[in-house]
Image (tube, rainbow, N blue to C red; front, side, top):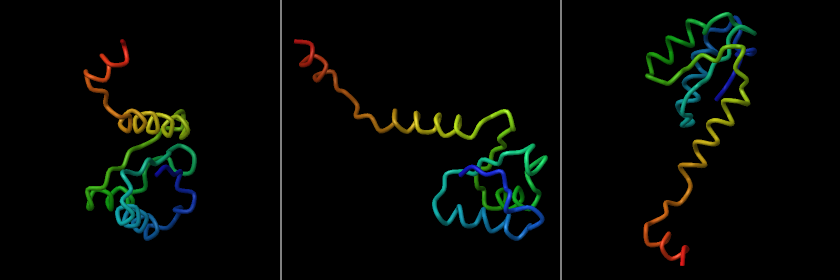
Length: 94
């Protein structure tokens, strides 16, 4: 999940709950955009992620969320491609 944390301002409880909810939902990680709503990752959010060993990464303002989504989707597409065996390549080249 990617967020700038707009709804998390001044609410440490909501910050902790977000990590718990993401973990329960099976989310892979949280990307937290800084320099817009927050100057840095809120302490409560960071501590909860550390406590649960939940992956959290900082997204600087200069990095567009769409660029992260594109990179993740490209990686997933590569992983989902069926592997070709050597036999199939020989069959298709004749």
